[in-house]
Amino acid sequence: MKLTVDTSKCSGHARCYAVAPDVFDIDDLGYAVPLDREVEEPVDDGITAGIAACPEHAISIH
Ligand code: F3S
Image (cartoon, rainbow, N blue to C red; front, top):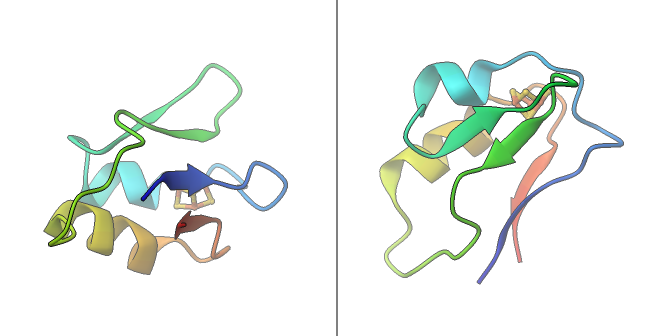
């Protein structure tokens, strides 16, 4: 599975980074970037927390 951030939805709230700095970084434009796009089962708690923290629903796993 892949962890993705939809940059058309990301507004730079950085809540994902605040709750899971080991999973997300913020790029120079203020968008969240997954540090590692590969997601293994069981899904890491930091990934789950980052998804839940985003008010724009910009983070997803495919
Ligand atoms: Fe963007 Fe949501 Fe994180 S708006 S910076 S993906 S909390």
